[in-house]
Length: 360
Image 1 (cartoon, rainbow, N blue to C red):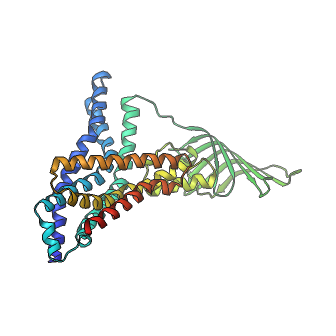
Image 2 (image 1 turned 60 degrees about the vertical axis):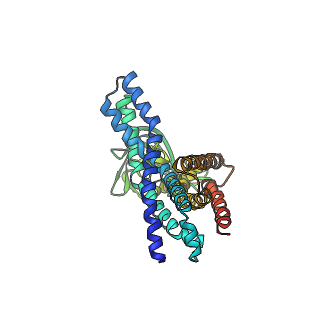
């Protein structure tokens, strides 16, 4: 009996979920669609180019529709079950609301996993393609071949400077590596006309090596044709890529943050908030499922239209909280992980309160 009930509730959620998914995607897609049409009409941009930009831009917005759709699906399904007195029959059979939530949570966990995988595998690549299409084919901007004046602290503790970095070729011109001891005293300097990245390490060419025995004693410069330098930094690290967190997967963004923190290149607070958001947003489906199911039972007379209105109100409240707390995290007023998860924590308490009220 219980297994039949689980399958019944789980299958009942599938149809409304996809209905909500396509509904919310359509609503969210209106703004980028209008933007694309404006470029076609006002800038004479190719319609084909704008279609490619639009469909590569869309996955980023689709991430937000997963929890929305879970919320709407539970509001509709449990509202219908309450109107049909199905929940009354379940309780008469000795099944409490906590047990009814089991298939709901299973469905939410499945959506959470799909959302996270989608955000990891589809969104970063599509965002990069959308950015490239907009810069090169719509705005006609020419991408620079090299990055100039790169400054970085490397994994072996050196302060590195490169006049030019050609990321795609894996070459740097006019490079300098300076090593300091724990007291901040310069101990060694390596200067090279060129550095080439090959086989997971750098080859410094036409090197001048200077060693400082103490701050008043400089050893004679030594010329060397080549030096192999084994550091974890790659050409992309020296090129200071301008990828946004949404253009990187969780592992890529985590590696970028660790590289920046190790080299003391820049403050990573904002990036850490973005990293935490990659897990907190997919998990919103879990909390939306609990609230949607509970709220659906307490509003037994509401139909699809009212359910849609209620879901919009709840979603608006959630994303206002998300924007507020993420802003606090990015500005340094709140721990990055806490700022990304705070709205989920609040919704968890709200969900627990509603569930306990419904089960009484």
